[in-house]
Image 1 (cartoon, helix red, strand yellow):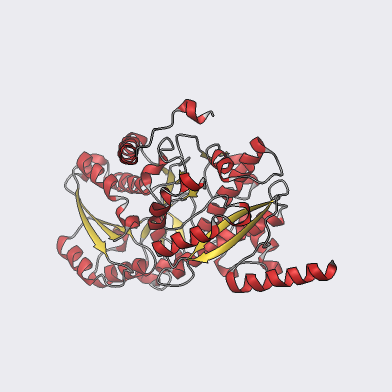
Image 2 (cartoon, rainbow, N blue to C red; image 1 turned 45 degrees about the vertical axis):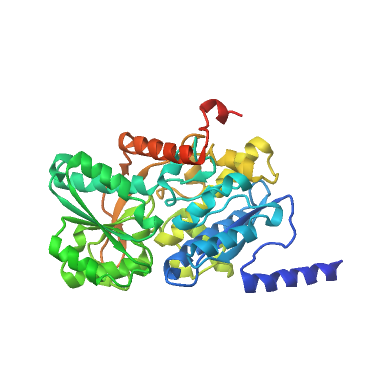
Length: 444
């Protein structure tokens, strides 16, 4: 028997090296399986890899803490290269393994769109922390999508609030010019509806400037910006598109202080190669920023990296995208904990039970602090009808060497956001013949 165990252990180790499989091959009742749809290759790898490292490290940390009431997290990576077709292939390949996927996090709005209709059939929640479909905040229609702690509509709303404050009030936005430089993909197009709504409300001129994948050619875009002289540029980029945009702004003399990126355009890979040339550039911080002093970061370094068990380079622990992956992983782990409180502590949670857990997240400050996230993020509370759970963000600014918070907290304005969410979700429900869930349905 001992020899058999050694052979099995060696086999698993070999698979782990070749396919990033870090879990036993056989399904056990005391395990929760999470597919990891990652991209460590291709044009977006410099941004995708830190997220994946943080995502996996938190599951390792959870196991080092004893799991969730003894239940261990297991996972398998599948390389998507940020391609929607490959993402769907990865999902289909992994969704049934180890007793079934507990949830899936695509790290791609395009893949999210593709999985939205599969999730209700497969009964696997799709978690999109800070990305995905903005209207999926409406849990009465999108019963299996969870855009936790922020959507692109919320982010765009906060940016408009911020520049209005800088200008001295929303009335001062009348006649101003705002250019949206965006990745020409479902991701990049997401904020347009909200910005158009705000433009109608406040009278600013919105120009839309799409950039083709992967975003290395922006000469024509910045020529338009130089000619039109917008008062502000919003950047909805990803990967090399972000650093390219900042370099082009520098080359054309557009002030970086007038540039504001979404949270996927505000991490170390976006600015480090530009250095002082990016000084003054601003971006949304989806609650967190770079958090090198956070208690959870110190715990990762102590319990994983100090023992040679960290997933990526030690120096990226605590950086922006690493933290994003860490937080995304923490949210799913805590949903497992909530589901166990209802369906049985120490027991395996199904996808349907996981949905219940995600709809009943209640991470108050005391719980977040206990998990090591003190000072990193604000409370998150979801419901059957609200699948976002938190609408807070800040601005951080690059000083040439590091990110620094440069604003107070902002909260997305529900008076603006909610009608857009409800109406857009309603159109989707009508198109797909979905009957909205009611509050009574949620109790079932």
